[in-house]
Length: 368
Length: 168
Image 1 (cartoon, each protein chain N blue to C red):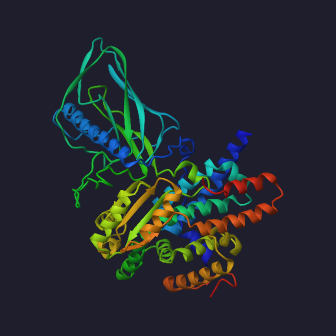
Image 2: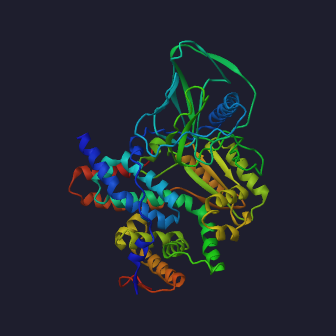
C-alpha cells in the first residue's frame, strides 16, 4: 500500500521561481482588440517587418547571418534598458519587462554621436525597429527594398520604437510554410505565445555594435477589467467542433462568430493548426505520443472573446445549437459560481469581522 | 496601511504559488502551462489582495481561480492526453519515469474526478472544502474521489492508502 498523497507530491516537479516583476507590471486591460484595431496594428507590424528586413539588408553587407549579442540571464523590474559603447552608441529603453500578448509598448532609443561630424544613416520607414523573439526563432521578416536616409547629427538624437507582442508576419494559406504562423481571423497577425522572449534591436552593427537583447515576459491575455472583479470571470470562451464536423458546419460557426457584433476578437484553430501546435509542443519530448495522433483526431476550435460578459452567454447559447458543435466551453459555470458564493456568504454571515463580511459581499457581487 | 497590505499580498503570493503550481501541474499535465496559469492566478490574487487577504481561506480562492483558468484550456488538450496514455501502452519498451506515469494516469481521469483527486490528496483539502472549491455537494466529491481512486488503481496497478470512506 502506498500513500496517494506522497505519490502525487512526488509526481510534481520543483516549483519554478516566481517572476516577481509580474506584480509590478502595469495592467494592459482590453488588449484583445476590436478586429478593425487589430488589423491596423497588424498592418503596422507588417510594415515594421518590411522595415526590419530592409535594415538588415542595408547593414549586413550581404550576410544575413546576423547573430544576437549575448543574452543576459536576468533583468531588472520596471523600465529596462540596454546600451552599447563606441563613437556612435545606442541605448534602448522599454517601459516594462512584461507585456500582454497582442499588446504593444513604446520604447525610446537614444543615439549618441561622438564622431565630431554628422552621419548618414540609411533605413526604411522609421529609423529603428525592435522585435520580440527568442534564441532559435528570431523573427526573420520578408525582404523588401526601400531606402531612406536620416542624418544623425552630433550629440544625442532620440527616436521612439514600438514593440508588438504579435508575430511580425503570417500566412493566409491553409498549409503555411515552415516558421511562418497562420494568420488569425481575417488576416490578422497572431499574438505571441505567452512565455519568455527577448526584445532585440534590429539595426546597424556600425552604430556601435549589436545591443544585448532585453528579456521580456509575454503574459497571457488580460481578462476584461471590470468584468474580472470576481477574479476568474473572463470574456473568453472556446467552441469545439466535433472531430468529424463538416467543413460547411465549421463555416457556419465562423460566419456567426465573424458577423456577431458581440465578438471582440476570434481565432480559428483548424485541425491542422491544432496538430501542428501539438507536434511543436510535444514533438521533442513525447515522440511516441505524436506518432499516435493525426490531425483527424484533434477537434477544430474557435477561441472567441466577447465584448461583454453578457455577450458570452448569449453567443454561447446560440453556438451550442449549431450542428457540428461538440461543446462550448465557458470560463465559468454561473451555477458553480453561485454555489461558491453561497458557501462564502454563509461563512461571511458567521464571520465576526465586518470587514470580512463586506469583502465577501464585494467578491461575490454580480459582475457589472 | 498600504505598506502592510503590500507585504501581506507578497506573503500570500509566496506561500500560495507552490501549492497552485503543483495542483495545476497535476490538473493540466503540462508544466509550462501550469507555470503560466499559476502566474496568472498570482497576478489576479495580487490585484485582489486586500479582499483575498481578509478571507478565512485565501488558498481556496486561489485554487478556485487556478482551476477555472485551467479548465478552459483543458478540453483542447483532452484528446492529446487520451492518446498519450494509449501511446504509452503502444510502446511498452519505453519506461516512463514514475512521475510521468503518475501524471499521465491523473491526466487520464475525467476533469471533475481529476480536480477532486488533486484538491483532496495534493492540496490536502477536506471533503467540505473540496466541495466548496468545486461548487458541488459533499456527496459528489466523495463519489468523484472514489471513482478517481478506482481508475488510478487500475491504471497504475497498485493499491493506495486512503482514508476510510474515500475508497470505493
